[in-house]
Length: 151
Image 1 (cartoon, rainbow, N blue to C red):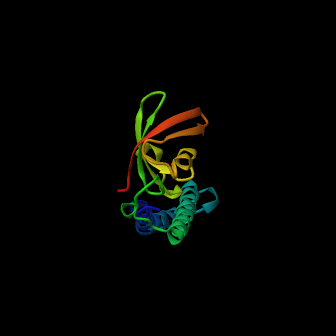
Image 2 (image 1 turned 90 degrees about the vertical axis):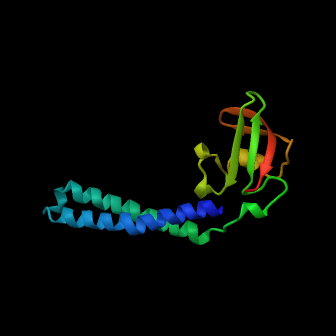
Image 3 (image 1 turned 120 degrees about the horizontal axis):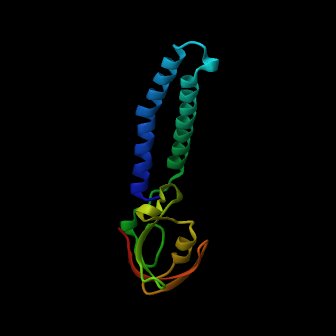
């Protein structure tokens, strides 16, 4: 996991523990004051939210506890975890830049590519100027690697 990804998950965990959890506990207490719990929609909604928050807290604690933080700035050479890679689609000439990151921090819209994705697996070990073929749900795609940076 990158340092930025670890920090983002840690921030989310702190938010859940310090803001979300107390808010849910307060909502449950307020809903209980309304009386009969069997027909109390507010109570059931608050309990459902509590279940989600507690589940996410456990998930984040597990991810953070097992995470190995890698500083991409200390890396160099061919493409590996943490690399920021600029590619050009050989069919459309469209240029895209991705950073190869861990599963928990992946977000394609922000250019964060899951290390387990077909594209990332095809890129690992390649160098600038290489061409990679990727089989995706949309069909076969061909990309040329324009640049590799470790930021």
